[in-house]
Image (tube, rainbow, N blue to C red; front, side, top):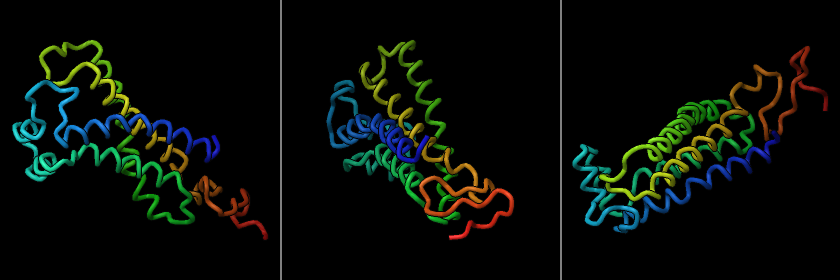
Length: 179
């Protein structure tokens, strides 16, 4: 897969998160579509023992999961941009990116639980769970697409990272080819 194709695939996967981000932001701003009448997300956070800072953010129109979703997408696209010999930066970004790929199975399990579970007593309406599941799968896929091409250091593979301007090293000597 070429770097451009990978970027397009990651953008498509990341687009799955946009309805989730918009919905969570709408809820944090006081909207009620998709949740039961009278349900208060901030009060639910507080009841479940969320840190006071997260409850405060929710009460002031900022949903932390929407912020985390945006951060995950930013991380995926940072990995897909040319890094030009920034090995330390790449390594620091890869750890959270690989951890974020666990959102794919989480999203799939959420979809299965939503499809086969009993949702008649919960505060969410039926269309919210597929939106959330699609977001988890999309963000996890975008992170995987960003992390996969950089899974090995260029020095270990004898080639440069996708999207970088470095010349590949020759397979036998490890030296750069003449200019």
